Length: 340
Ligand code: PHE
Image 1 (tube, protein in one colour):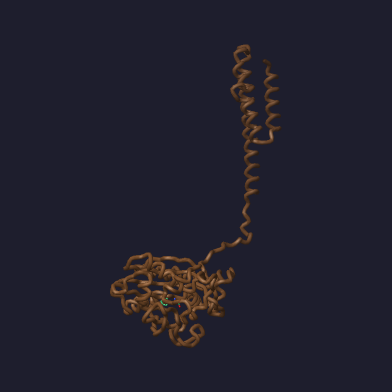
Image 2 (spheres, rainbow, N blue to C red):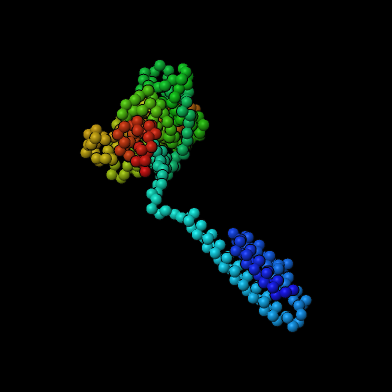
């Protein structure tokens, strides 16, 4: 082997290094030079064949070639890595001046909020939460509630009939009858849900919501109902809330009452929310009529009960200062955004 050949090898490798256009190609050159059967490795191995007198010169030359090629490879690698980094920095650049897309934060519907708050309070008091069908039979909605066919008290609720026997429930009281048939006293249930009546103005919507409560046990009296509702109202609207019980009439309770609370907005002074009266009418209630217990197979000599029915739309409107009930049903995202 001649020194000039060694020089050729060096020149060829340098050219290959300069020609390579990425890290992978550069690595191929490295293997080609220093790999197991690379040119420089082979030349080093073949030193034996060189004349002993020539060996020192040859050795020095091989070392020089190795050093040069390693340096060149190192420099080129650095260049490629720098290029790669610059490319990534450019691609992954973040424009911190770009306006943000904004996070959409959801909100619960006011009715959902009221249902959650009321059922939470009732569950604390030992009630179970139940549900019933919105498409109901005339039997559970009326007859089992002591409202026979053609009875004048049916006029209290302008009902949507589907057939003579099937209707959209006009009161969650229908669930009372269903549960009384199923359960053995004592029990305490609340039932939130949608109800329907042919009614429509700023405070009435054909679809609305009620929360029904029913307690059946021995020795239940009007006093239990009054104290339970007082606690419930104070927890919902605040300790300072005043509660007023007025005599009323429902076919399924005897005696019956209606319950008003002091307006949470003006605390009884009178404002536009309570239309100047200082009080708001919120629910109907009463001691369950023994006839209703008997219809559903509960011994009215042994057991008594009390029941109440909350208007949830009213409650939500008062809590969230909503002036028109229709806003609750329009699905207007701008309205719901205000409920956050
Ligand atoms: N169901 C009655 C209504 O819708 C409310 C009510 C429920 C009254 C339970 C008394 C007891 O008007």
